[in-house]
Length: 214
Image (cartoon, rainbow, N blue to C red; front, side, top):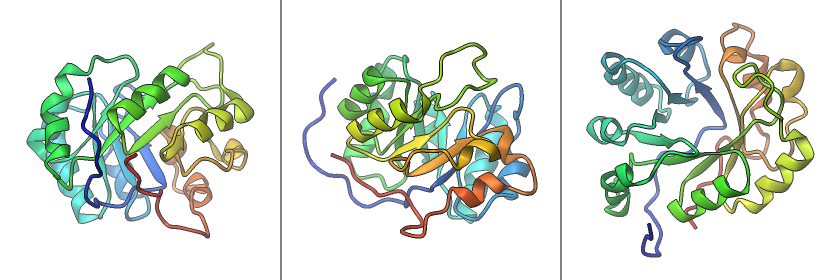
């Protein structure tokens, strides 16, 4: 699928801290999201359809970004962003991509990537953001090989767009996230009140990930 060259108009800034919902561990992320710093992002995966409008309202009130995981029609209906899985087909995305081309300020797009192929796909789709994983070993994918800081950093530098670190991000590993990362994403590490991971996601240089749509 090819898109005509050009740039999208400015949109809501991209957060540095992202919470991922999970059908098993965090099916209702509202309470966890409300406890995070204002402006944090949410990737809503496997969330019940009845909860999505409430999540959209919550994020607008908190000036955060909501990305609906893998359901382009739902993202269009709610006028919110979309997170696309690494190996999902792209045909369903066409109406959402048209909304982006038309300049919809809410139509943020992120793509999951686990290596070079995923990064290449993000470039073809001209995604705003890439979630590159797994940086560290993670219980979400038991036994799956982690990229590790060196390989993760090498891949992130090739991405040509902002990259957020995902996979095994906890208080003990957050300080080892390589410099190319513009932010951190996690599930269980953001469910604790101390939020040491959220503090480590903040940068003295900028409050948000850079916005670029090359």
